[in-house]
Amino acid sequence: GPVAETFRVIQGAISKEFVRSTQGVFQFELSGEEGGTWYIDLKTNDGSAGFGKPPVTADVVMSMSSGDFVKMFTGKLKPTMAFMSGKLKIKGNMALAIKLEKML
Image 1: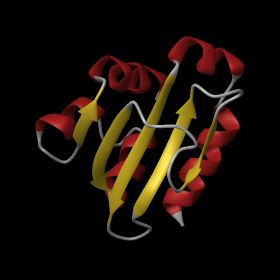
Image 2: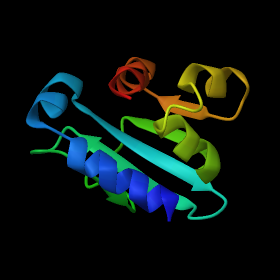
Image 3: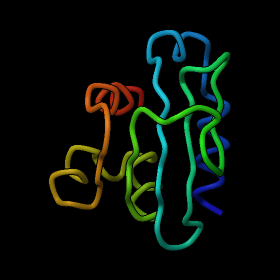
């Protein structure tokens, strides 16, 4: 599905450079189709992304619908707008959340 595909693309785009410059673990709590827990680890080894809980404790937890997640990662929905309109909820390190937005 679109969420799994998005995480495949993210996994392919992760570089040692991203991991070194970000040093953060992001957990996504998605609702709706393909909902559940997904993660992007930009802290451990060469980084990773996928379904389930991250291998280490997340620094940032983001909650949103799976549809909005896909829109956000394909550039159709600005993370700031999603946050302001209540479509995106963020817990944890806001500075890291902003780093992730820049990476998008």
